[in-house]
Length: 624
Image (tube, rainbow, N blue to C red; front, side, top):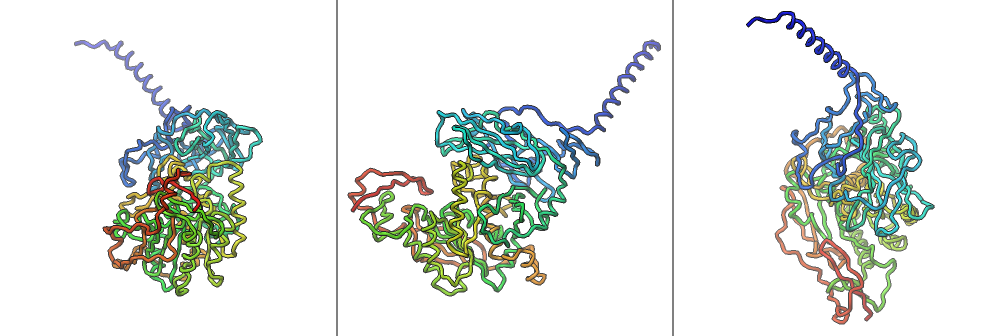
């Protein structure tokens, strides 16, 4: 077939022109750095998106989002987004609307935290309004915030929460006093520039709703921050555990990832750590704790509290034991004990006693009234919970001084009760008493007055005994309030921990809040002058692994049921020693052998019902 040369030449020239234009446009796009900040977010799209039932391995590369796919490439040049300069070494403003709940950084994993699922996305009838600056923008170092206009006809039992979630930073809004009826003011001072999801929620024990528009887009503008400089600064700060903790507000701070955490300080196993402005927390590895266990100086921590504080005990045990040693932790007495528990590895011992004195009187008085929990007698002239608590501590310090604890945590009801408890501790004991007066999910999201009451209570407790040091657990837990045992529901569970299987079995207890508390308390006991000086005292002894066949001693006196609330003045634990690890429990635990509720009292109507781990308990109060 004969070709039409003039027509072919014309078509070729046209094609070449189109190709040239395409190449020029492509070159411009490839060489001009841009940053996409998306528009309005689709409803019910979480920052970390994952269906509630899916299970993603923290080591699976198939589930890792390509972080670099949305990061602008600038080849050393700076970008400008809304007047903010950014570079790859800076805190680049990013937004990932379809992230899974897991991100892998060069220095290790960040375990998943669910911040929102469909169950929490029902809109509240309240609304959020900007306070000062536009709601969607803020400046580093400048107070910003929002106002929640509460629907007057809504459930008065609802609390409100403001939580900012970024890729490397999480922080909560603080409620401030409002002079307007039906309006709540929340403020925050951002420290790191970047893009955040701002969750504004209405919460009670039964449900949890997003304020219309939540999660909002929060763009924090500010001077570029080089993460390497931030990490160096964190390393230069003093150890938080070496500070005498006597100020109620001493530990206000942010949750950050390895991107901002000090290189020498380290992070929790999840990749997060709580960072303060004035100090950095020393983090102790499994190798560090193995050295403590092998030292000639015995160390012991005694945790007194409820199942909430038992989470700190669980996290400590999880930090100390190896993967093989804690294989059967869920099937053991260690998992759920409503009595007394000891786990000892070498010269390092952590102990727990169920110590629910919050409902007990603030004085030891006997009268003709009784209290029954279901069919069990919980309080009478012969069964006084506070008296048993005092007797327990007296017995704890009756043995050799070498067996005394170095640190005790207590959850007191008020100052008079705390005074009576501390009076049972010998004056010659030079350990540390830590009152965990606000380690509750409910505490960190309530009203301005309750925040002030928290600090007032701290100020009163610090005056009780010179050995008292304060830990504002509420500040630590606030940024992780979505990471409860019923994540992301904040108030459905009071537990900040749950059993898990992460990092190939190295992590059997998940809970950044309880692990952070465990690290804080371990540091106070192991290295009260700071980890750096402690390492120097070891004369170069280092350990990254744990010796095999080390002895573990487990002692327990755990009743079959939590009910009724009680404290054994003198536990009678059963013990075993093993080189293989915690044993699963096969024995039938005894029930509390206290008295039963009198028949006449059982015929009366309950005055209240309490939800417990053993189910709900009906409370009856009667006169003899």
